[in-house]
Image (spheres, protein in one colour):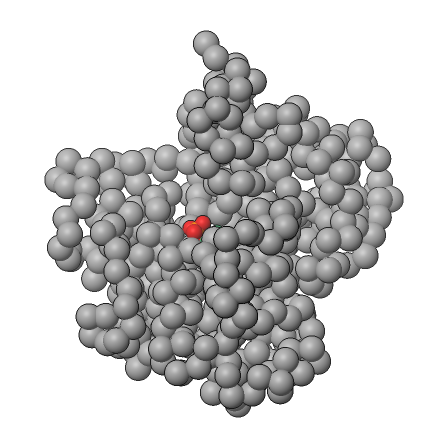
Length: 420
Ligand SMILES: *Cc1c(COP(=O)(O)O)cnc(C)c1O
C-alpha cells in the first residue's frame, strides 16, 4: 500500500505541484483519497475524516447520495454523452427557472469558470460595452477576464503570468462592501461598463456577507447606468436557500451563473437570466458559446436528482442545524476569550484568525494565516477535513449528523486550545 507521502512524491513527478488544482496542495503533503461516503472521506492510509471541505461546495447532500448513485448509474448504462439534446435538459432548466427569480432561460456548460466566461461575454454582447467590474478577492473561475485580484487559490499566489494586459485592462476591481469607491469607479468609466459581477456572499476569501444593503445598492446603481448585474452564484446557488442568494437577499440580478451544487457531484455550470438577454446566445443569437459536454446526460441527471431533494423544507432543516453549530462555535470562542471571528450563514462557516471584523479582501488578508494553518492541521489530526486555506469556506451537508457537528465543535475547541 502506498502512503500519502509516497503518493505525493510520485504525483509531484507527473502533476505540477502534485495536484490538479492549486488549493488542494497543502504542506507537507495532501492526503490521497481512497473513497468517500456521506459525511466521511477516507485516505489511502485508511484515516477517516469528517468532510467539511466537501469538494469546495458541490456536495450539499454529502458524498455518493444513494438516489444520485442510482439515477446516474441508470443513465450511464444508456449513454454518457450524446451530442444531441435530451428531455432532461428541459426538465432541469425548468427547475432552475422555477426557483431562481432572474432565470427565464438557461444554458448548461461544464464548470463555473465556463459559466462566468460565457456570462461576461453575454453581458458585453448585450450592452456593446467592454469593461467589467469585479470585487477584490472575488473568485469567478480561472479564465483570463477575471484573474485580477482573485480569491480562492489566487489569494495565496501572485497574479498569474500568461494573461495579456490587453485582456485585463477591461477588468476593473473595487473593494466589496464599499459604496463610495464603487461609485467613483463607475463615474470614471461611465459609458464603458458592461457588467458588475459579484459573489453575493464572498465565499473565496473565507465567508464575507454583504452589509448595509450592498447588493441592493448594486442593483440600483447598475440599473441607473445601463450596466448588467451578474450574480456569480456558483457557491450560493442552491446553497443559501431554495432560490439561492437572490431569494435569500431578495435582489434580482440580470444574469446568474451556477456550478458546484447544480451538478450533484458531477461537472456542470450554467448561465441563466432574463429572456431578452439569454436570447442573444448562439444559435439563437450572436454571442457564441458551445461545448462538447454541455448539458451532458450524466451531469444533468446528477443535477435533476439533487434539486428534487432540495425542497424548501430541506433548507429549513439544514440551515437550522448549521446555525446551531455556528452558535456553538461562537460560544466556544467567547468562553476561550479568543480574538478571532466566527463567520458564516446558511450552511457555510469559517473562522477568521483576525481580531477585526472582515468586510472585504484587505480585511481578510490581515488574518493570521500561520495560525490558521496550525488550526487546519490540528483539525486534520482529529479527523476533521476543512479546506486548507483561510481564504476558503467550510460547508455542512445534509449527510452530517448532529453527532458529526457536535464532534466538530469539540474538535474546534480542542484545536483552538492547542493553537493559542
Ligand atoms: C468555484 C467557483 C467558480 C469556478 O467554478 P469551477 O467549476 O471551479 O470552474 C466560479 N465562481 C465562484 C463563486 C466559485 O466559487
